[in-house]
Each structure stands twice: as structure tokens, then as C-alpha cells.
Image 1 (cartoon, rainbow, N blue to C red):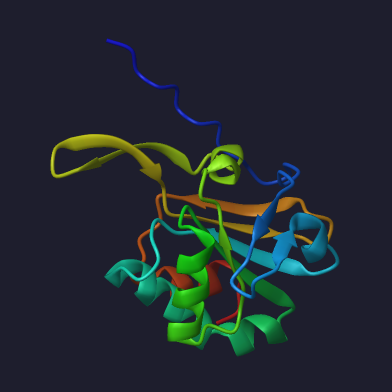
Image 2: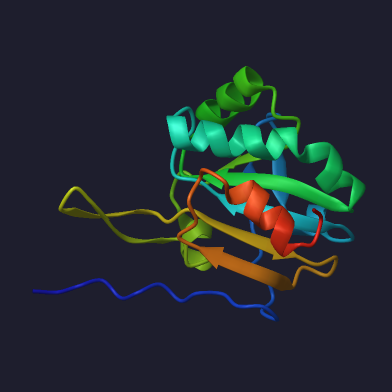
Length: 161
């Protein structure tokens, strides 16, 4: 039996892998667009599901204070572009969501890998969050986060509360 390798996980000090993806505004967003500003880059499994909606809305509700502390927020999912456009509009998020339909960027960030759910093993997106500095270096890397309470914990980790 062949098993897929465990994805390489990023750590503080690593340079964030470059990307350019379709976004929820109908344009594209790249890592270069985020330089010069601290960024919370979070990966979520699927738009318009209960846990992902809760997490996105928690980020939305913390957007003013995160922005006041100098942080931009960007979400990434393996959804097609149309799904992230619809999800961002329905939830009035106020920050871009990126469509990584072929999960190439998720693989670069180590967020695509083996998951287990009710005894079933499959490949999917591992809910994760990265905080990047103004130069695009990883300051904080959190894998396997739980949607509920994640933004509050992140705010504590960043000493914003």
C-alpha cells in the first residue's frame, strides 16, 4: 500500500510561497499585492459550509480591529472562482477570498493532505492560518485549526486582546 507523503509544513522565518489566484472581486490577488502590510492568510476547506461560514464571519467581525493593528485578511479555498465570489458577497466579508481550485497553492503551504472523517481517509484541505510580515515572511503558522474560536485565539496569539 502506498501512502502519500506528509506535506512540508511552513514555519516562522520561512518565506511565504508566491501565488497569484482569482479573487472574490473578479480580479486576481498575488502575494506581491500583499507586501508592505502584515497579512493573515487563512485556508479553509469549502465556501458556504457551516464551519467555514462561521470562521469567515469571525474574521469579518474582527476586520476593523485587525486592520487597526495593521493586518490585512485573505482567505483561500479550493473552491472555483464563482463560489468564492458568491460566498464573499452573501456574507458581506469585506476582505478577499481566493480560489485555489487545483489546490496548487494549498500544496505549497502544506495545507493539502490526508484527512480523516468518520473513518474515511481522503485528500483535502487542512484548515490552517499563516501570519505574514510586510516582507512576506511567515511570522506564525497554525495547522489543523478549529473554525470555532479560531479568530479569538489568533487575536490572543497576536496580542491584540
